[in-house]
Amino acid sequence: MDTAKHIFVTGGVTSSLGKGIISASLGKLLQARGYKVTIQKFDPYINIDPGTLNPYEHGECYVTEDGGEADLDLGHYERFLNITTSQANNVTTGKIYNTVITKERRGDYLGKTVQVVPHITDEIKRSIFALGETGKYDFVITEIGGCVGDIESLPFIEAIRQARWELGTTNFLVVHLTLLPYLKFTGELKTKPTQHAVKRLLEAGVQPDILVCRTERKIPQEIRKKLALFCNVDYDSVIEAIDNPIIYEVPLLIRKEKLDERVLTKLHLPLLPEPDMTEWEVFLHKLKNPVSEVNIGLVGKYVALPDAYKSIIEAFIHAGANHECKVNVRFISAEEVKDEKAAELLASLNGVVITPGFGERGIEGKISTIKYARENELPFLGICLGMQCAVVEFARNVLNWETAASREYDETSAYQVIDLMEAQKRIVKKGGTMRLGAYACKLKKGTKAYESYGREYISERHRHRYELNSQYLEDFEKAGMIAAGINPDTALVEIIELKDHPWFVGTQFHPELKSTTLHPHPLFVSFIKAALVCKKRKKTHVPY
Image (cartoon, rainbow, N blue to C red):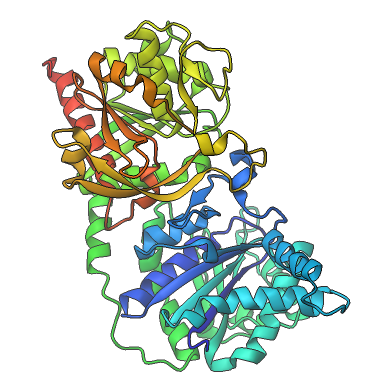
């Protein structure tokens, strides 16, 4: 039985208004009052998941503990609420149709004509209610991707309309996020786009309970009254969401607007206790009042779209706040870095991170960056492909295996120091076929990794097909690149380090995926600490 209260967050006028941040911020406030909250994202695209999408299409592909490839908004949910999500927290049109068609082929519908209503909408509702039926949560917040009025979103909106009837008004609430554009020429905030967006929602049979208005200016009283009148919501249910460059300030801003109070009142729940945001405010104070700063180079091939590396950027924010340090991330295209140009691009940095990715493009630039970091004692963090590139660079320039490469982009190399896992060699399909989700790792005592985590066993999330070829491990370790972390079940290398370097660490997993505001990832914390030491050393010209 579904005992949770369900809150649906829809959007109008335009996409990318911040439904994910509003959902996460509302969830944080409810959680801070003592409620158990989870958030799920429904995406209207027909892909089964974003796993096969180019990052320029969709931003980063987030990975859950249980191996789900998911929308990047799930990262916001985890970072804000300090929870873990699962495959069940991200549902796409593709997943819905795939499930329905599979059932039809199996004969589950007993020869009936399969239609959008009721079969597709019933499957959407089943997914909506699934988390609430676990009995683990007081609130399930469901964010609907895209815009109201999009053809792709219609089945989801219809499912929401039906859900109101099934849940009852005391267990159901719709928050509609919309845009109030400001026309500089007339000096006005315009309500008409919002009115039309709400009209489209009403035409689909869904009345919003609360209107959250994204705006670059304060909303005057008369505008709020106009919106309440024409959108058929209470005056105090018109909530201002003013632009703010710091997303972690949004929970406090919407708290001032009493969004959480409006939600609780409409769902007939008590307003006490007040949300305890003490830890959050301490984090924000450190974030907004740094006492130092460092410059970190982020070298990748999707740097034109920072959302492709969203979790890495946020992990630096968390680790920076931990040190009361502002982290200036400088995006560097891997294709621009050449051996002769490396010093020009990297000399002013206090640390460099080589990002995850797939394919050959930008590989040589990443290897040139790593060579510079290794030879100039620049703190280095390589993530997934970044670690693999570090292995290739070391093989070429230290072990003198000039043709060393990864099988991913060079089938002919005599030294394929990065190779496919045995289980991957016969796989042809792309989606969901990698090593995905959380795996255990045993750390070697006396290493930077062990020092960072402070314990021997850890669990981290993966998304890759290729691994360090263990037949070469002895050669690497003799030359100074050690396996600092090993999977205890498969003996696969999870972390590499250089012994004779101030801070040079590569991870096969994605540490950024487990960093949250209140629990910054230990490797990022340690990396920023090393960057601060590097900056001090450069200023004083003192060697390590």
